Picture 1 (tube, rainbow, N blue to C red):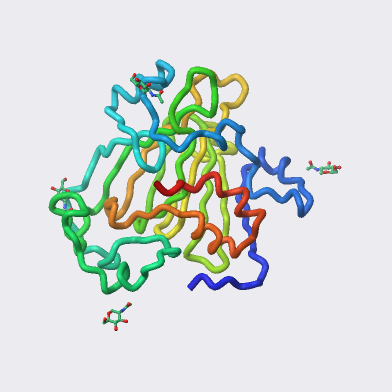
Picture 2 (cartoon, helix red, strand yellow):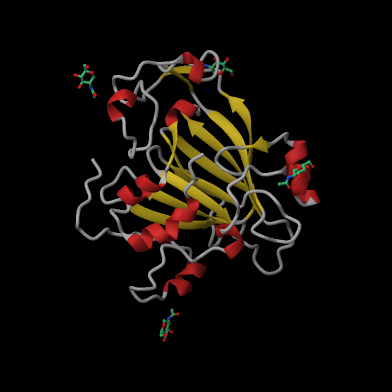
Length: 267
Ligand SMILES: *[C@@H]1O[C@H](CO)[C@@H](O)[C@H](O)[C@H]1NC(C)=O
Ligand SMILES: *[C@@H]1O[C@H](CO)[C@@H](O)[C@H](O)[C@H]1NC(C)=O
Ligand SMILES: *[C@@H]1O[C@H](CO)[C@@H](O)[C@H](O)[C@H]1NC(C)=O
Ligand SMILES: *[C@@H]1O[C@H](CO)[C@@H](O)[C@H](O)[C@H]1NC(C)=O
């Protein structure tokens, strides 16, 4: 499906107007997105420790009962629509396309209820689910948590709404050949940043916290709500691994270098 074609990959960059100035680049310097603060790149891949967050971030975590999440950051599911719909998705779990055993994990897969939440039936989905999601701290002193959300993919369509903070989203359109790379800033300055954005199923997305604009006084964070339609299930979720990134970027070393720090390391 993702043949390593020698055709040059077309890159479509969606950068906000402020970022356009920094995209004045030679071919060699053609960054997929302006580099984040070094503290974000070098952030350890550990689950965040709420006890080391600054007070106003800690207050969000406590008030909304957020817990550490495997994608990086904190989350809480706030709604699971009781309306059940037939699943529009395959009856086998989403696995990254670098999966060495597509036969076992594909259509011949046998459902193992013990691997999923009690009562999960692969033939059904809740009509929607909604979560809070919080990434914290791009290296400001006193911040702890996880400033990056690792590249991952869902089968469902996800509607995101920003509550606080500023960050960058990177979307890899894995369902297109060649894979288009998109990048945009989410933040409260609606003239040039997004407060609402939609990522369709089948695309990998990663996120990282950006410093606030001058004059904004708040903890560094990306604090959002996400509504997934149909409802979120781990069955429909996969992380992008290093091999998968190489396949998607068709071996383009420069793009791989710019994105690999958003890949969750295997445990
Ligand atoms: C791009 O770079 C050139 C050469 O350094 C400079 O003259 C030009 O003003 C720059 N354009 C923008 C939009 O920054
Ligand atoms: C996380 O918090 C606990 C409890 O306060 C503390 O003992 C531990 O050292 C912290 N871990 C890190 C990595 O900061
Ligand atoms: C949908 O969500 C409800 C909780 O709101 C749950 O009891 C039910 O099992 C879910 N249905 C499916 C198909 O997962
Ligand atoms: C599923 O199993 C059958 C029988 O073993 C095999 O012929 C077929 O190729 C498998 N399908 C896939 C997609 O691996």
